[in-house]
Length: 100
Image 1 (cartoon, rainbow, N blue to C red):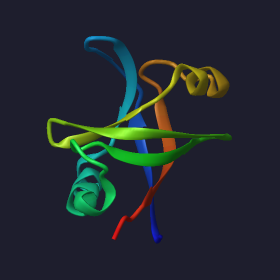
Image 2 (tube, rainbow, N blue to C red):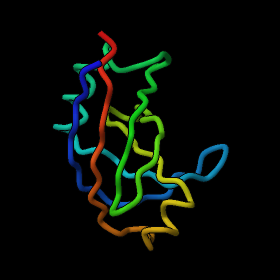
Image 3 (tube, rainbow, N blue to C red):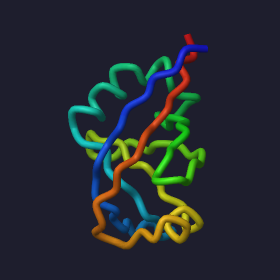
Image 4 (cartoon, one colour):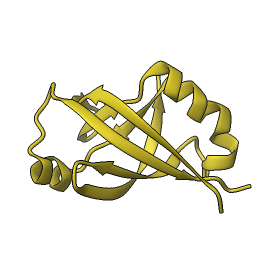
């Protein structure tokens, strides 16, 4: 299946929902591009699977839609491995697989 890759820069934030998580919001222009392709990327409920690379760490996760943007969850193991802290600017590469 064909893949799409994008590179983003964003700030590591903390969102205190039912369980606390750390995310990097995807900027509006890139979120709009993902949103336009969402029917070919999602496996349901608006959640989009992605392979993400930060520094030397590659991991799989799913993007979450929130307030017209997508959020990339950043796992504790990734934050530790890359020495990431809240408020830090993060550069990441996202790879998506197109379903159709």
